[in-house]
Image 1 (cartoon, helix red, strand yellow):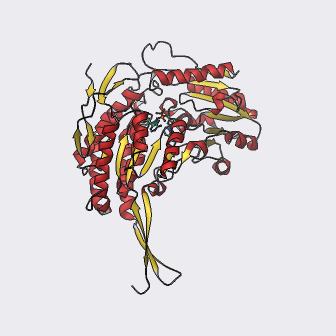
Image 2 (cartoon, helix red, strand yellow; image 1 turned 180 degrees about the vertical axis):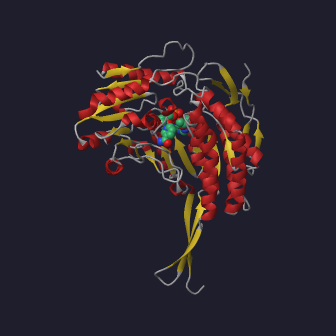
Image 3 (tube, helix red, strand yellow; image 1 turned 60 degrees about the vertical axis):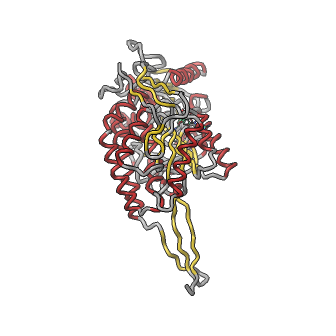
Length: 484
Ligand code: NAD
C-alpha cells in the first residue's frame, strides 16, 4: 500500500527542512495500517515558525497593514484552493480518525472555505474604526487592530473544521498564525498547507508545525506569541491557561463537555431520530458538544430507553469511507481503551446496559467499539460526570422539569445540549435555564453566524459569529483634541 509522505514543514511561505529526523507515523483507524509519515516538529522548528509569523506581523507593509479587501482576495483564493482539495481532505480525515465520510464532507471539506469567506466578508463589510464624540469636549478614534502572532493548537476529532474556527477569523483580522495540529491527524494539515501555497498566502502569515504536547507547551509560552487559541481537553486547557495567566497572554479555550440531551414529556423522539443521532452520537461520539447524558421523564422512561436502544441497534457500523456507514472506529487504540474503561466502570457502578458494550463482532481490524446505551444511570456516577469521548450514552431518569434542570446543570462542564419537545416555545424556555454555552431545540447545529463555546470547565471565550472575530482583535483608542 502506498503511503502519503511529507519531508518538510510549511514555514515562512514555503517548504522548510525540519531541524531533526523525528517523524510522526500515521495509521488508519479502520485498518490499523500505516498510511503516512510527516516530520515531527521540535522546539527549533517551532521557533522558526514563530519567528516567521513575527516578521510577517511586524513588517510595516505586511499582512496586518493590508486593507481588509486585499486580504479578502487572498482568503478567497485560499477558500477555492481548499475546495479543490475537499474530497481528498475528507478522505484523509476519515482514514486517520474514523470520521464517517458524510460527516467529513460537511465538517472537513466544506466548512473551512465557508468560514474563510464568512470572516473575510465580515471584516471587509464592518468598519474597523469609528470616531466617537466625547463628553469632555474632544472625540475618540476607536480602532480594532489585529492582536498579533497567534498560536493555534487543535485536536484530532474534527481537525480541519476546528482549525478554521481559528484560522479564518485570525487571518481575516490581520493576524499571523502558527498552527500545531495533533499528531493523530496531520495528513489533512499538510494538504491544507498545499492549498495555502497555491493561494499565495504571503510568507509567514501561516505556518504549520505538527507535534505532541511538549512542543505545544513550547509554542504556548514562546515570548514572540501574542495570543493563544486552544481546542482540546480540559486538563490541557488548564495547563495552557496557567501559562497564559503567568504571561498575561490572552487565551481562548474550547474544552471538554458532558452535555445533556433533555427529552421533555411531550416529545415525539421516534419521529426525529436523525437529529437526535446527530446531537448525541455524531462522529462516533468524538465531538465535544454531544449530548451524551440523555435525561428522560420517569413517566415515559422505559419508552425513551427503548427508542434510543432501537436507534443504536439500527446503526450501520463499519468502514467510515462507505457512505452508508453511520458509525466508524475510534481514533486510536488508546482512545478505545479509554472508552472501554468507562464502559467497564458503568457496569461496575450498576448502570443497566441496554445495547453495545463490546467490540463489534465480525470486525477484526480497526479501533471499533459498539455504540453503547446505559439506562438507570445515577447522575452522580462517573459515566454521568466525566467526558468519555466515544459512542456511549447514559440515560438518566428525572421526575419533573426542575429536577431535569438540576441534573442538566450538575456537572463541571457547560458546552452543548439539546431539548426535545413537541412545543418549541417550551423547549426555548427550558433551554434558557440550562447553564451552558450553546443548546439546541429539537436539533443541534453549529451555526457559523452565532457564538459557540463553553462555560465552567468547558472553556473561556467564543468562536464563530462576530464574537469569534473579537478575540483576534484589540481596541486602540486615539484621543482627538477638540481644537484639532
Ligand atoms: P488534548 O488536550 O490531549 O490535545 C489537544 C491538542 O493540544 C493536541 O494538538 C495536543 O498535542 C495539544 N496539547 C496537549 N497538551 C498540551 C499542552 N499542555 N500544551 C500545549 N498543547 C497541548 O485533547 P485530545 O484528546 O486530542 O482531544 C479531545 C478533547 O478535545 C476532548 O476533551 C474534547 O472535548 C476536546 N474538544 C473540545 C472542543 C470544543 O470546541 N470545546 C472541540 C473538539 C474537541
